[in-house]
Amino acid sequence: MKENNNNYFRLRENDVIVGEASVKGYFDNLLKEIDNRGKYLRDKYVVDTIFIGGGTPSAVDEEYIEKLLKKIKLHYDVHEDVEITIEANPNSLTEKKIVSYKNAGINRISIGVQSFDDDELRMLGRLHNEEMAIDKINLCRKLGIENLSVDLIFDLPDQKLESWHRTLIKAISLGVDHISAYSLQIEEGTEFYREFKMGSLSTADDEKLRKFYDLAVNELTNAGYDHYEISNFSKIGKESGHNIKYWKYEEYLGIGIGASSYILNKRWENPKVYSDYGKYSNLDLEDFDMWLDGVKENSEKEEMGIFIFTALRMKEGVNLREFKKIFGKSFREVYSDKLDYIKKEAEKGNCILDCSEKRLFLTENGFLKSNDIMCEFV
Image (cartoon, rainbow, N blue to C red; front, top):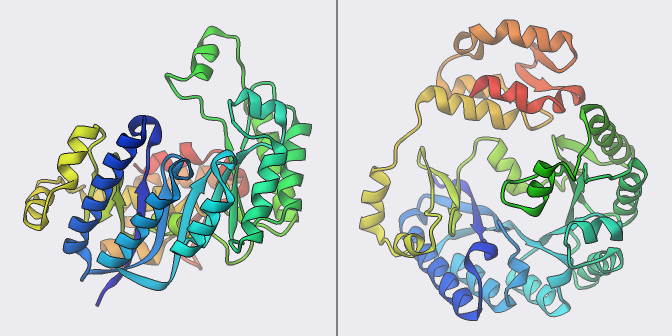
């Protein structure tokens, strides 16, 4: 019996794509990897979600995305109700591309709006403004792709609560099905990081960060969105299928440079250097089988930690019956040394260990401390 599987395709244009020749070369390697992995996995899995992201795939010509999806359908057993998502930026999303995406089977678009404030968008170096973002959301609907998600960012330097509130209200008014709300992550090597280290840039303290987060939770839930994961809100039935499978400890295959996979009890990352990735993508059935044998498996305790860490991201939390079914041991037996910690966090209102429903989950208050709590188990 085949298992359902999740495919995602990582397109890192910042690292790889510097011209048309590089685009073609990279996609040739993607197609080879799809061919070769399909020979290994086709008879084992049914693909029910496909996520094309990890960069800005809408930046490349639509013909590459068409070829990618044709190749997947040729070499994998794809479910008839497959959810196919592509990440896109408003400035690179055109009418021609949207029509092509729909014809290729894409039925969900995640749009990197970030903000509906033009000053904030300029500060972020985005190539779109509020008007363009709104126009592209409406264009997607007009052309037949109605399942839309938008990414929003809060805790921007010197951002006011009023501006964040306006962005939330605008997203709600547009009626998109899914909204992701992330705090700004200042990554080493970026201009933000350099300014932050020099002291010329500041972000919110914990108290203000809570106000931003609480505002998002209140506005979005009051508007009918389900806060189903720490940073994600959706209308009922419009959750991200790709993300849910990851958070629920299900298997997934990553295609592309730096993509990660969890298949057949093995976890690995594809090579992050382009030349190495080219060699990896060309591994045929026999060579890949040998390569996979060399992948180190996590210990049982490490896998337990991953199970808990990812499940706690979701509102429903850790299913303790499922934990015992997978690992053959009860949560209390494995984590007896964490029970006092859980009790203390419960007293603070951060989590609940529900013995009747056999689940451990974070409260809304606990979501803000999620990293600290989840890291106790890994």
